[in-house]
Amino acid sequence: MKMADCVESVEILLVEDNPDDAELTRRALQKHHFINMVTWVKDGEEALAYLYGTEKFPDRPDRPPRLILLDFKLPKLDGIEVLRRIKSDENLKHIPVVMLTSSNEERDLVDAYRLGVNSYIVKPVEFEEFVKTVSGIGFYWVLTNRVPDC
Image (cartoon, rainbow, N blue to C red):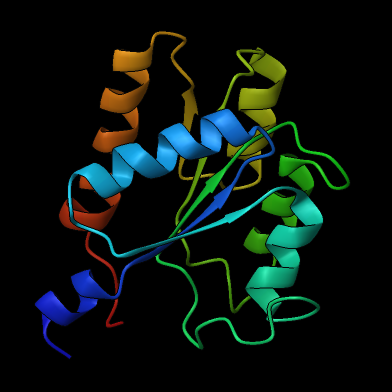
């Protein structure tokens, strides 16, 4: 598969319970035309169901997402537990996980890195900074970061 094909098939799993933040994130990523698919799930249980292709996601793509944007504080199953499960699974642990969260707590940061998060970013409050930050995440993880063959 050519690199151009890989870029076109990029999929980002966005795990975010706040619909406003999810929409802002999706718009910032789509604005730059380097992805064609962002899948949004609203809680930790949905994230795992998507990753394993169970429950309401039996038809998800066969390949795993190339990037997971994960909120820390989620209903049903919090982001730290989702991260723990991803990074302890041989079939998922290679997927980069970026915590994109409003939590600025040092303990949350330490816990996330202890479990193998690839990056921890506190969501900027200002709209323009939020868009700039999310766009930067997309550019780095989709265009700059090298990944194994798709």
